[in-house]
Length: 460
Image (cartoon, rainbow, N blue to C red; front, side, top):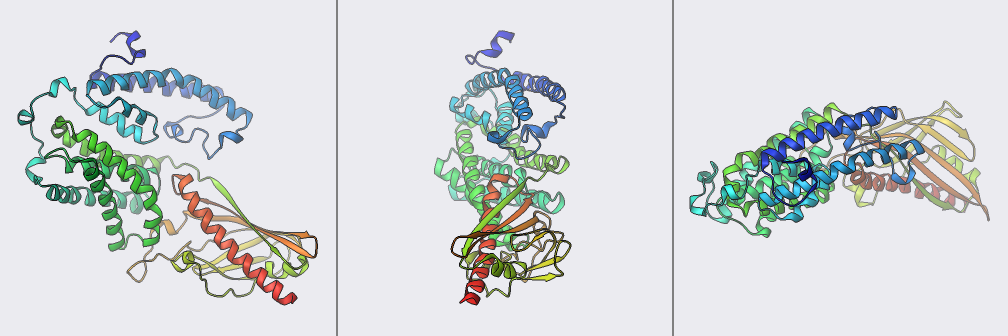
């Protein structure tokens, strides 16, 4: 291939050339990125392609140095992006795959699977034999011809392997990240659809259905074997099922080409190698957990002096009626104060234990700010068994501190605002932040409503 042809999306390219150029191109770009990062006084590693700034920075709130660094990195990346897209278009054409699949080049994490697939798929011309002449996969003798039988074998293969990969990530590597929540559902769905279509091309609905069912059975196995609770599985499903469906759709596209059968072992390796590889990478290169803040407020028909007494140590709260707390999420019961002023210790008792909160700011009746030195488990898992202890109950959702702010309002009223600063080790952070913010807000409102009811009742 001539250098000039790297820039043109027309034509075709074989899988070996595609793999070699991709490897060399990534090596060149990675070293250029390291040089740019060094010029800005930064370090650059493989994991920085997912977290460029080493944290959860928003593009709208970048510092001047961060903005200059990001702009330079984007400028360096543009030629490589163009070459990558051009070569991927050539490769899709040579494999007789839809050109629209080039959009997967830009999907984080899934693009790694996509590029690996393109390095494995043979050229269409070399495999354009009649279906009767195509070499069968080693899986073919084990897969029945019927749809129901092939679906059953697909599930029997993918669910146990998927379960083993989940236990590797959670029980051994203690990682609840991209490998577990993104790569695994997609890879299990893709593999299930490919096995389902070994005997004959299946419908899109059938491939997507098998892919989603494999993930649902994985969840059922985790619940039945006492590795996970029902509520956490329900929280993961809105993320896992669409990814499983996407994997099933990709499997549908691939299994329509009969040469896919001859490469079945290579495609099954996506499940066996890619997912644990990503889990291990996350374990070795631990990304810093971003810090978040949740603020909730309420108005109380009483002056700050009366509200303050309940803020410092609120009385027993009646049993919860909210579905979230009744399903196992930890909820506040009462608060106890040991001493007064900065250095005093507040204990906020929850259904799973007590938060230990040394007081940092005691500005009565305006501000009470505290750190948190001890966190109880964030929930009691709902399970058919008496009790289970998944690793994510300890050290993955951690409160760093909190604050009550009392603002006087006209008419003798008070605006009471509660804030919690916390971090969690669950990825993708954007998805899990939706759940953690909602849970913490409900905890806030349970306390704030109780304080409001107690203060206004005493005032009356």
